[in-house]
Image 1: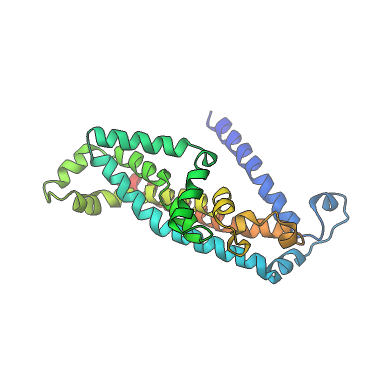
Image 2 (image 1 turned 90 degrees about the vertical axis):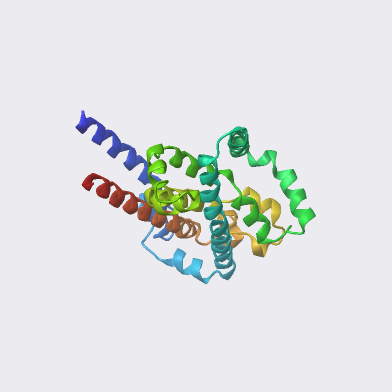
Length: 260
């Protein structure tokens, strides 16, 4: 049974890796993948040279990095504190807040783009990266993720910590937060991927094309027509790197748990 499961997982991983392998291969040749299969393409780094010589596209990558960093700087602590409040708060207020966050997460952005657009106009943030940063920073995804993880911690852990201090914040920081390291690593990966791949929000809230992120520019033939595959590979590297880091953290956490 284990061999069958391992074989099936290997097939799934291979299928998952094929598009990325094809993308990487296409970025390392002069031409496209079909020309390589016909034997008409030769290995070349021209796409990457063209990419790093394209100043406008590099500015879009910088915009993506700035927006993502701003979103994470706000969303991460807000998600942790919000999830902590939902986990420890009991009563109607907690239930109503949790339901509202679940509904807000399930709503497609198309249903809230008009209010978001008008709110950005009213606050004077329209055509500013802050309009995108603040809108995404208060996404309910992170708060609900932390809340779900905190609900899995036994109540006995909280009660045992109460013997040392009556402050819920101190209990969370000293006793609960160390247990949340794997959860926080996953949260960072989810929040980063969501912020890095924004498309609708920048298109609606940013009018100046010079402020748009790379996520909306990879398919722009005028910007990336000479090296579309290389641009896609470079754009994917941060998420793949963070995914590998989170995997290492989870493996170490699992090993420490088994030792205990």
